Each structure stands twice: as C-alpha cells, then as structure tokens.
Amino acid sequence: MRRKCKTALSKRTADILHSNDGASIVLVTIISIIVIASILVLSVNVNTLMTSADRQYFRDQAYEAATSMGSAIDGLINQNKLPLDKYADRELISDSSNNVDVTVTVKALDTSVNTYTVTVTATTAGESYIYTATYYGANTTYMRVS
Image 1: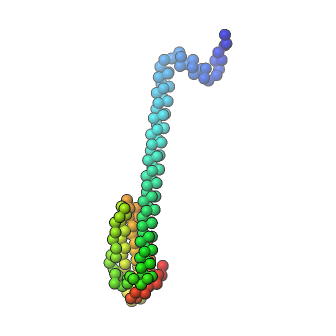
Image 2: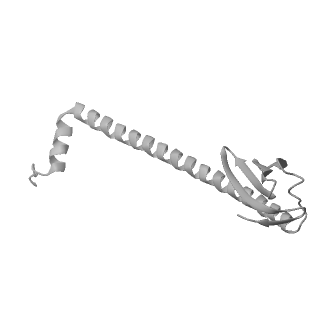
C-alpha cells in the first residue's frame, strides 16, 4: 500500500473536503459565483461591443448617403442643370429611404459675389453626417470653391 503525500496541495484539499462536509458546499458556492460573475461580465462586454459596432455602421451609412447625394448634386451643377440662385435660401431636396433621411439645402452666402453653399445632411438612427460644398458663379455656370 502506498503512503499518501500529505504535503501536496491537491492532497491536502482532498483531505479537507472529505473530512468537512460544509467545506464542499462553500467551495461549490464560490465556484458558482465566479462562473455567474464571469458570464455577466462577458454579456455586458458583448452588448457594449455590439452597440459600438451598430453606431459605427449607422455613421458609415449616413456618410455614404450624404457623400453620394453630394456627388449627384455636384454633377448636376457641373452639367449646368441646377441654377443655385433659383434655389437659394431654401430646401432643395428632402428624401427618406432605407431608414436614412437626406436633406439638401442651398444657402446664399453673399449674393453680391454670387457665392452659395450646398449642405447635404444625412441622418440614420440618431447618427448624422453633414456634407458641404461652396460654389461661385451666376445663372447656370458655377465653380466649386471648396
């Protein structure tokens, strides 16, 4: 018969658990609390990461919508199909599709030198992006300044 080594940690722990019934219950309770706390911490971290990813997705969606509409408006202005002086100081377009609200406004900065600002605002799920472009010109000929 082999002698038990009483100095090994696992042997001492086994002896304590065998001799004390209450110690086993306390150990199981502590391990259960640790496991439940770990699950709660992981759950909170996953929810935080998913919320952050959703916000970034909505920001990207608003950016794409605003820059896309801005490019389309810029193309119309370059083709001399959109006289900015006609639409100055009012809303040009307001559109809502795929949970994205896009609004285009034209504002006259200085009518004496024919400077206009086109502002495209895209909003989706509380996140928004604003695209602006400044034009100089008259009648149907405009040049983008910035």
